[in-house]
Amino acid sequence: MKDIEDIQATMEAIGVRAKVAARELAYAPADQKTQALNAAADAVLARLSEILEVNEKDMAFGREKGLTDAMLDRLKLDEARVNSIVDGLRAVAAQADPVGEVLEEWDRPTGLHIKRVRTPLGVVGVIYESRPNVTADAGALCLKSGNAVILRGGSESFHSSAALHSCLVDGLRVAELPEDAIQLVPTRDRAAVSHMLQMTGVIDVIVPRGGKGLVGLVQREARVPVFAHLEGICHIYVDRDADIEKARRVILNAKTRRTGICGAAECLLIDRAVFDTHGAPFIEDLIRAGVEVRADDTLQVIKGTTAAQADDFGREYLDMIIAARVVDGVDGAIEHICEYGSDHTDCILTENDETAARFFQRVDSAILMRNASTQFADGGEFGMGAEIGIATGKMHARGPVGAAQLTSFKYLVDGDGTIRS
Picture 1 (cartoon, rainbow, N blue to C red):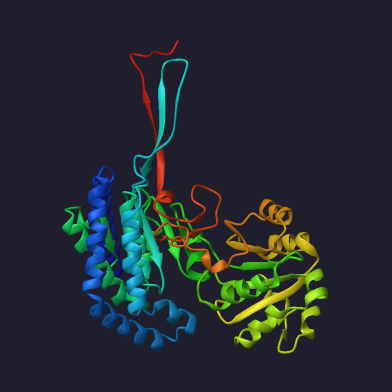
Picture 2: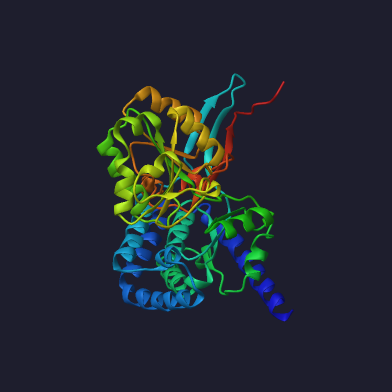
């Protein structure tokens, strides 16, 4: 009981400090926030050896905990990945500051001049599992958008997240911004998560980053708004007018580049006209690459496939496994995606503009792609520098959530002694 009381007191104190910091960040000059992010990037680079050393502690903890290979891949940091974190911090620093941006302005016959401008949300809570880079991405994007952030990393990334958080605080200190603007929950205890989900009046939005279990828990129990996606069940549809060589490259990359990310392809849909004319060389490519292809009855004629079960469709594998089936044209693909998709990312491979337009119009996922790998479903690849997550809901933010998506807006109304008749 005492431990729970201590965690509650800790979280309440963090919340109070975050609210105070958020008020100051709301009007912090753009160049000051840019300075903080660049200084944080410098700190990460300077402390590369330390970050890799503590990450190895986390990797050992993860192995003992029995994490899957996909989860261990998410947890692992190497020099290239740390350099990517540095690049992400600098990219966010270089972006235009969204706070105060005029979205619209107009005049009324009454003499009023009205502007709608971006404003910070306030305090953002981010709950994530094994990816320590989320610490830097979330901290950077919240700072850029003028929000304070409370970060609760996974138990397995505890040391890596703490090291990266320390670098972010170094940046805040250099820029003379409140160090409480980016806070990391200092415990592995899950009671801290439960408390965060109930912090109404303190946290303005929660962003969960992790597996279905974590996201489902947050969506069920949070009493504050949530930006999230439950699963990344990403489909690729090969249309009768696809360029087969393009299709082979895209499909192989979409499945195998990194299997453990939410933009990895999980289901391949093939137009019956393609299969009848060309077969399915892209399935043979996947099998040669070591992917287990769980195929429908039609595709089981391809050597090396295994028989798909009913629950193989509409499933997020995050592994070297993909489901595959033949459909009757673009409408068959659309019907399948509407039934089994998760509104995350879906792709059509076609050279036919009209077919692509039909797919884009009738599939209502947050991200739709044509002739491009679903692995591009990432805020950094969208030019946002980084992302705090992918949102598949339909209110406020949708798709990659970058700095601009972490703002709301307010109306500024100017008059000249104007009164209403």
